[in-house]
Image: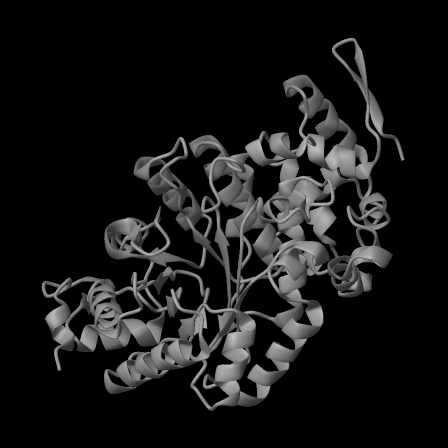
Length: 452
């Protein structure tokens, strides 16, 4: 295994595989903050050269967190399809990139089952933005809860009716408005202000009452901590999807208050008690930089740690995986260039890992980015066949205080690209006079459609 190269008359030597992966990453403020980034463009290119010549076996044998020290590493390594792995283990990371760009989707999916997260991260670092769009578009990842997400030709949206006080009337007003724009086929999912069992149960019961009354084919979720949702489930509260934020290391997951055994327990409970059809009952959110913010990055770069999130998520066959790409702030993704790159990277890595990926294309107001940048990312991801985006009133979350994508954005993206909502959802929206032939009808945007 060669960890050095000569470039422009200068020799570059790297400490180990982790160092190569970190310095080959495109510039990210989080990697600079962690002290793992390349010092300059020349060193970054040198690291990419070394990375391109490492074999997949090299990456298998050198995870960024040792197998015996980290349960996420163990989950990732133990889940590898060894037959698929052995078919490509002697290939270099550069050769893997060429294969992905040349092969059809079914063959890429087969190879993906034999890759560890470090391999997924490594090949991503060698790809251009256009490569990431082109390769991701070839991969289809569907999942079924009450409806099926991710089919070719569809673009779905999470209706995010967050409210500053969890007031039911205010939450329902947002739900009615979002549905009136054809948003909500991925999930109606609220981030609660109050994480108590009573409040979460109250919200879930209200969602179920509303969707049953109006015959809305979708999934409901309140994005509380998994332990709160498990207790609600034990009480008989209708839980369609069980949510949890996850990280790429055991240490960072413990900072979130979770372990693999707890996720296992929640998953098994949903198999028995979920209010939805399944077999995909889980919903995970991730985002580059979370491991550094919880001091669990293990001196690895944030892209590789993000890839490890997807390696963990695969264990639970989720219905939704959402990359909240710009939510943490400029400490991790400084500007629009870094946010757009990260969104394309994460979407591709998730799909290569076999996951039904969505992206919350978002930013915080202290970042060097604006709504035009986010709309650029949305267009790129729509062309890459991202499964779903967020739908918020005027793209502004009044509870989480960040900027994302609006109800109008979803409608515009569908019209530009010819994509449509989930079939059953579209049919119901047509019955209500909201959609016509996959486009907004004359009455769209009128929440009084759902007046009692």
